[in-house]
Image 1 (spheres, rainbow, N blue to C red):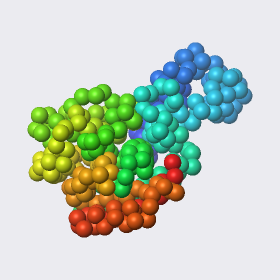
Image 2 (image 1 turned 180 degrees about the vertical axis):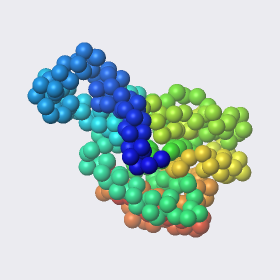
Image 3 (image 1 turned 60 degrees about the vertical axis):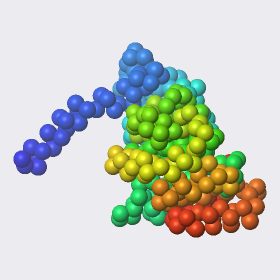
Image 4 (image 1 turned 45 degrees about the vertical axis):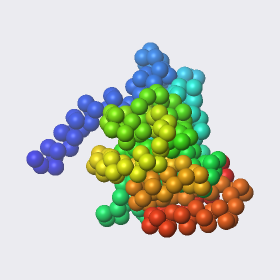
Length: 295
């Protein structure tokens, strides 16, 4: 096929796909416009010129937030609108991806990609660890999972905190079988749940809290599970229990191969942070980095 033949072929293919990606069609799908509203906007656009979004704002049929939402969908950058999802608003990257906190999270995503996920032969898994509860470990793991998914990476967040799980609440997921059932071989990977409106993100919740969390995490089936899942997704993040309260975090870090340590600003003591670092390195876990959290 010559260049002159190729250009019309691409144009024809684009014309067939375009209606699915047009801003008007996306806003109709989202329930923000009716078909007759789109016709009004298009008529105004033909008469006055300019862009579809500007015409919609002039007619007071659209807001700037509506246009941002549609553009994000058009460029395959999904995020959520408040009041329209069961996902907690603590997941700031899912609701406000243009805020300063989300920008910091994207910077952290880039660092983790360069230092761990994009290296030849590197594991696809990373444990998120903190010394004590309340340092923002679950918050950070959840938001990191969202920004990796927004990058286009198929991302799995595993709630490996079998003692005080939070991810099912943060993402508004059904309370059903989860990691504990998989590790006790009473369930399989069908327990992984997709997050609505964030198509590249899945979560494996902790499930029923067992009486023997450390013993379950130490079973060979956990390593086998991670090995299997690593063939299905690009990034696996594991939320873990507080390192100072049990040996669970070290076991999870060993299975993942690497850890990111979370420390709360103006709260954590130096000796506690040092102890967490030493417990991780003594287990021969690669420390990819540390995050000073002030959320």
